[in-house]
Length: 336
Image 1 (tube, rainbow, N blue to C red):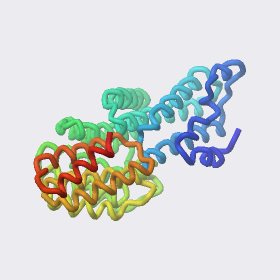
Image 2: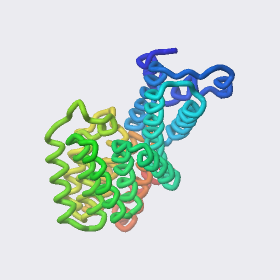
Image 3: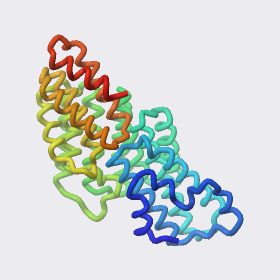
C-alpha cells in the first residue's frame, strides 16, 4: 500500500481523489478477505481527509462533497467490518467524525444547506457520544458560520458560545479562540448588535496575535491574517459600515495567498457587495471581475457565485449609469 506521502501526490488535483483504491467501483471485493487495519491504513485515511480540506480551501466544495461522502462510507464500512485494535478503532471513529463535519462544510459551500445541517448534526452527535470536545468545537464553529448565512444570528451566537465551552474542556490554543470569537462577532453583527460584535472582534484579534502553536488543530489552518481581516470586514458590512467594510475587505483581498483562493474569491465578492452599498461602483466592478476570474480559473464554490448574484441584484437599483449597466451585464453573462 502506498505511503501517506505518495498518496498526497495522487491528490494533487480534485478528480484524482476518486482514484483512491478504496473508492473503486467494486468495493465489495474488500469483503472477500480479511480487512485488517493498521497504522499505515490510518495514515492514509488521515492524509486523505486532510487533502480534501486543503482542496476545499483552494477550489471550493462543489466538486468535493460526493468524493467525501464516498470516503466516509468506506470509513464506516471499515469500522463495521474491519479487524483492528482498540486504539485503531478509536482513531477510525475520530476520522469518521472529522470527515462528517468536513462533508457538512463541503455541502454548505455547495449551497446544499439542508444536507449540510444533517452532516453537522451527525458530527455533533458523534462528538457528544464519544466525548470528543475538539470535534464538537469544530462542528459548532461550522454551524455558527452557516447560521450567519441563513440569517439566524441568535442561533449563530448560541452555537459559538457552546463551542467556546467545549473549547475550554480541552484547553484549546489561542488560534481556536480567535476563530470562535470571530464566529461570535459575525452572529452579533447579523443581529445588528454593534457593541457585542466589536467586543468579540477585539477578542478575536487579541487571541490571533498570540500566534500559532504546535497544538493548533489542522482545521484552524485557514485562519491566517487575510481570512480574519475578511471576516471582520463581513461583520462591518452586516453592521452597515459599508465604507469601512470596503477598506477592510480590500486589505484582505491583497493579503490572501493562492492556497486559499476560494476564500479570496469570497472576500472579493463580499467586497463588491459592500462597494455597491457604499456607491463605489468602480471598486464593485474591479472586485467582481477578479472574483469571476478565480471562478473561471477552476473554483467551484456555489457560495461565491451566490454572492456575485447578490451583487448583480443590488446593482439593479443603480442601473442608470453605463458603468453599472456594464457590470450587471458582465455578471449576468458569466454566472449561471
